[in-house]
Each structure stands twice: as structure tokens, then as C-alpha cells.
Image 1 (cartoon, rainbow, N blue to C red):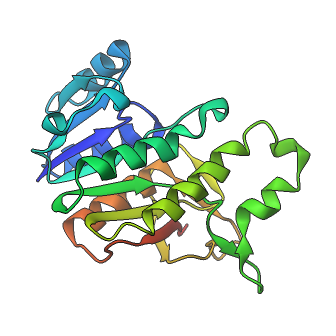
Image 2 (tube, one colour):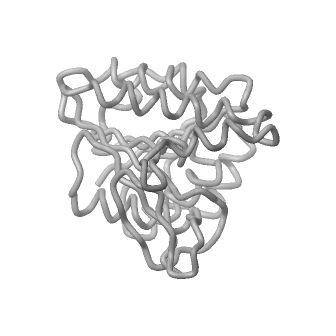
Length: 217
């Protein structure tokens, strides 16, 4: 399968590229840092690379892909770019079933507690989160945008409360509620995220919806 990853040199993107290549897929890694792309290619020689800003990508750059994964990350002061890029990709492939678009969202749009309020609402109450709160806020807007798209083959995934670099574990899977493992931890490693995304690509279970995954160990 031809898999293209936008933001391929980031924490999530590089783990996805590695997992996809390991499973024998034809992988194209897209990023705007030449140095980081060279380093990624050195580590994973089988991949193809494309040095290009995500917002400069054209339909011609992406249309040969079976699956296009948006692993883009922004600084908090430009968190709106999460929504802008999703809108750009959706616009490129309106009324098309290919490529399948895969979006990585945050945990802020998940529900928690008996009243099922949004995690981002708790985050907004803590002043220590002020420096980055715009990211989960805009990732919530990204999900809300996607939920109104019915003519593109898309799917989205959210990690647990703590999304960090690390090896894959057993996978906990849910729909819209924040997940916790048996130890009461709400964590997702980049390896677990990559494993879950590739599993979903190879065995499609979700269509035009968001699911969530967490480390089971």
C-alpha cells in the first residue's frame, strides 16, 4: 500500500513511517526540514522523501497515495494551522474515496467523567496550560470540522492524556472517552500510536469518525 505521511520527521510521524516501512508498505515521508528528512532516510533507506511545506502541497503531490496521514504539529501561537491543513486536504479530495485521509488529533476533544465533559474544558481551568492550550482547542475545532465532512474518506485518532515518544505496548481502543489502563494511567506512546494507525489502515474498522487509543501496559 502507498502511504504518505505529512509531518514525517516529528514524534508521531517518524514512528508511523518506521512502522509502515517495517510492514512492507511503500512510504513517502514529507517534511520541511531537509536535514531531518536526510536523517530519517538514513535510518529507513526504503522510504521516499519529499521536501515541501505542508501548505505548498498540491493534489498532484498526494493523489497517488492510498492513505495520507496528517501528522502535522504546530507551535501554540499558530495552532490554527491544524484546522487550516485539515481544510486544505479535505478540499483537495472532495467527492473522492482515495486517498483515505488519516488525521491525528489531541486528547482535548475526548470526554471524561460521568457528565462526559470535554477534557479541554479541564485543561482550560489550569493556568499552567495557558502556554499551549491553543493546540487542544484548535484540534477540537479540527474534529468538529471533520465531523461535517461526508464526501471524503477520512478517519481521525486521538491519543490519551499523555502523548509521548516510546515503544509500542498493547493497545487499548475506544471511541470518544479518555482511556485509562489498569494502573490508572492515561498514556499513549508514539510506538503505540503508529501500531494502531497501521492496524487500522490494514484492517479498516472506522469511516468518517474518530477513535482513540492508549497504552495497555
